[in-house]
Image (cartoon, rainbow, N blue to C red; front, side):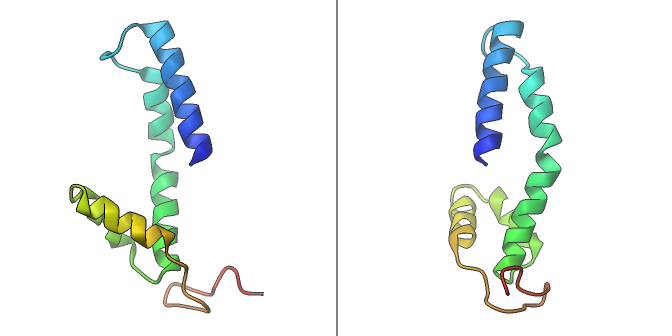
Length: 93
């Protein structure tokens, strides 16, 4: 997330310098965000699987404010210990 945020900010600044003022299309940062959309979704689904929830919980993000808060709470929870229905514990020895 740190790499994504820093890269997006830098590309947004480059877009503004090359292509003009705010409010216009930002092609470099938009292409970067589009290229990382699928990997970002995969990471979120993997994290939900770590806490033994299906990937469909990602749709909760479409509920304004409350959905985002619930997802953040899910993301900071400790993963299930041992195997769950989505496979073995990746941190197991």
